[in-house]
Amino acid sequence: MKNFQKTSRMASMMLILAVLVLPLNLIGQGSKTDFTGSWAYNAEKSNTGQATGQGQGRGGFAGGDFTAKQEANLLTVERTMRTPDGQSNNVVMKYTLDGTESTNSTGRGTSKSSASWSADGKILTIRSTRSFERNGETMSTKSTDVWSMPDKNSVMIVTTSSSPNGERTITTVYNRK
Image 1 (cartoon, rainbow, N blue to C red):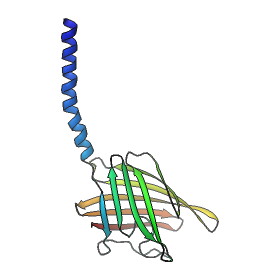
Image 2 (cartoon, rainbow, N blue to C red; image 1 turned 180 degrees about the vertical axis):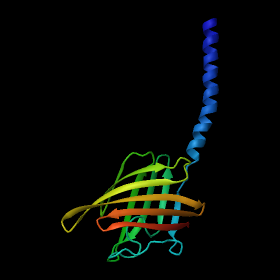
Image 3 (cartoon, rainbow, N blue to C red; image 1 turned 120 degrees about the horizontal axis):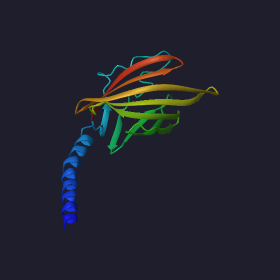
Image 4 (cartoon, rainbow, N blue to C red; image 1 turned 135 degrees about the vertical axis):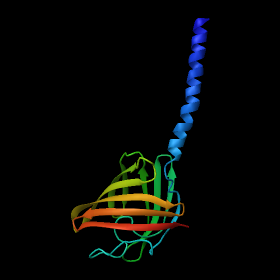
């Protein structure tokens, strides 16, 4: 009888603990900013500058509309980009949101990225290294994209990139479609 009471008491305590801890765990997951949506580039609020030898909006995450889908531990970003000759190129990038490395390939090479959240879950930082071929030589660039939502209808991405040509910081703003 004593074993039954002890087991029953232990089961009750575990149930109470589960009821208390599970909601806290769900609240913690839900407190991260959700970037899901269709986003239109806002040139007036963006500051992309003009790098020497590059067109407006080149480099980093600059310019162009995109769609983001955030599920559990994955952020998928899909955008259509224009090549210098005017061709459309659909690019899909996937980032795991727990700091593990993600690899994405595009027509411009391969990038390895890791994403991390700020302590309050409001800012997502994606650090990437991109490798590509140019004139028969392998080159790489590094960038850091800092994502935030100043309000529920806009996303701001501050990109700092470094390459053999130097460092550049741009700010791009997107409005919810």
